[in-house]
Image (cartoon, rainbow, N blue to C red; front, side, top):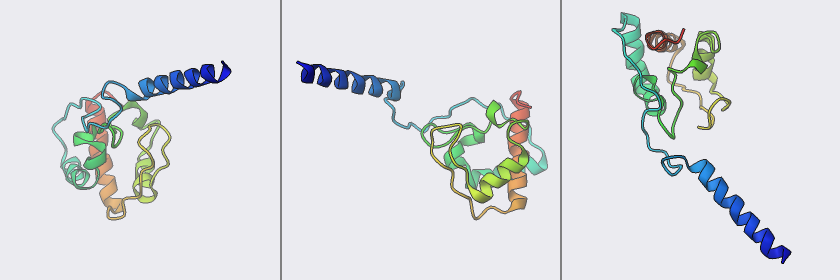
Length: 136
């Protein structure tokens, strides 16, 4: 009797876990943008930053830093506002990588082929996107 109850409870718990983790897309990464991003007319430095971002960051953080479901978080998000994640935090993330702490995408590895100067231009781009989307 207890064994059947235990098995039934375990099965119910497993089903609950599958339901909770699955979300609308069955829990599978679908590579869609996580947030909608309004793109402003970019300054010259931000346009340079966008080009660098597109080559080195877009595969995980999505087009215009909108995030990519199953791959990486949006950088146009209140979590990354300047008061919470400074420009230096972005620089350290690129240089050293980041242990996952706000999202469930896993750790971000260092991006070895991006220099400090290039990172600064990426930050200009991300900050212009953020301001354009009400994140200051």
